[in-house]
Length: 339
Image (cartoon, rainbow, N blue to C red):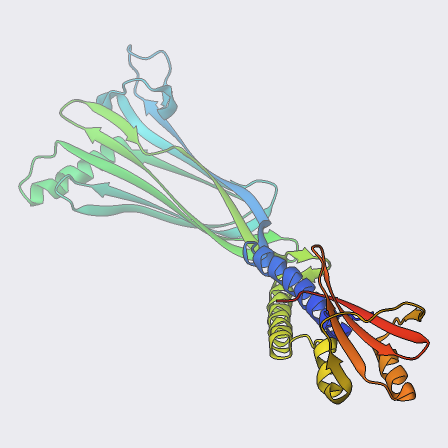
């Protein structure tokens, strides 16, 4: 029997392996490049809340307007300036559930609508854990002070502001670490002499959350390998697969399948003769050979030529190689397509 498509087994295996490598590497390349190599997580290193609060109270002169001798800025009712004797400001600063220490700086400015201001009062204190400070302002003294200044510039005093600002510089202790912290808090009292009103602007309370976060980069993995390593590996495998496919294709087309029949006829053309029809087999022993090499051995042994016949059939054509002896006929048939 003759196999007319006998590619070397190693070439078939090489092509198969190359296709597998190419398929796997292509999948890995696509997968790794549509996926981020890292996921990002935020981790809170520390977090705390700091509270700053002004409590403003108006100490009143005896009057028949208000039922209480003292009003709070949080009462949200009109306060008549001529009934106010003094203003008491209580300031408090603390950080919840944490140890802290530092200094508190409180400054009081008197601000004129023309844009100039005068520092009226300034205090500094050191504190630990909680900062407390009280400031008492005499309305009569402050108005006299501002009117004297306005007389120097020939301006009638009608309205001005009292600005109270607290500056906190502190350290916050978290475990064995300490972190700097600061806060500025301002409230303003508006004294309107014409309308006889005093009002408060600015937040009386500030509550600020301070937190420090860091980003954690977690490597994505597949089959125990990081995405970055898989990108490199898949690119390398893709290159290897491409090279193997190229080599296989080159060998496949550069060295096409050999036709054993043509090689046989070319090699032994000196002892092969062609005939138009099969000789009579009457009275002869017909022997069918299974290998093409056997017909050569028989021809040499009997010193007979190999006769080539073409047997044509509607379904299949065959080439018959025959060696005739006195008593025997040796046949070897090759299915083929006759053009």
